[in-house]
Length: 344
Image (cartoon, rainbow, N blue to C red; front, side, top):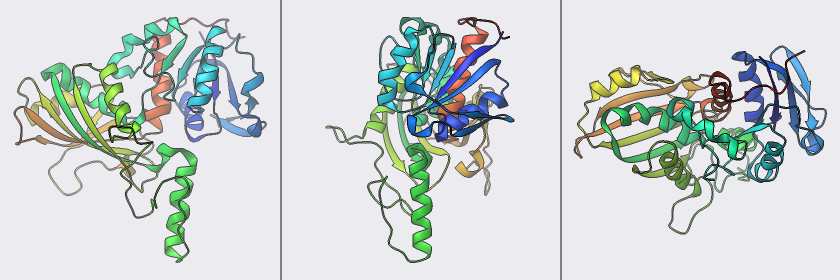
């Protein structure tokens, strides 16, 4: 059984990662189609040991496509996901356009795989925000064990979360600093090289940014609407990998050792937690890896039933591309989607 898969936004950071992960995980494909904007027509992208030439999204017929992996931004997703879904193709969208739609499942397979079955209402499944995805992977097993009531999270998010332009800006600014050239900020509101920016996305009326709101709303939808969560999201001069310092309050007592053992047995989690110099994971080490890493698990002495931990993951993989392919695997493994036609 093999599926015809289209990747929309194939020339972007996440789109290329999707193609790489499809090949790495040997997802059963009868055909893979790379799609992009008219300006990228003919651009070559890699899929395993093959090279694909990009076709134009605007004129593509999805009637024989089974799964569309979309990473082309919210405006494109808002316009095209319903059109593609209407042709009987399941869209797994990486943008924020459909995450809070009540008829669209928001899925992290290690956390709420069963929710994927709800795709049939619109033929759309949403991928969560990259910072949310790794957070809920770490929270889920702890919530099952001791019931989380409140989370305070501070994020340290890499520039790749802002796309290729973000990575290019960090590189260009860093070079300018070393050669004493003027540092120009285009993508970010302030200089990012050798700096931190406590703003990701636009500000809302209550003073929080949209990125911070996403973490709250998406965690409630994926994990539990009763969980209270507050976030401070910070952009840092790291190319790949999001990090999070997480304070968690529980309804029931749970020790650091118990949490460590629970997380060691949890799907998608790797615990690296030695009480010694370097006995933890940094974003540099997590880059290119699939796991959500958890380190520095300890008791929070300022609250009852509290823990503190450090959580790191590759935002292009678990935060985006990998999660999308894992959703496609859920559709296949749970027999929720049959190919429209057999591979030749």
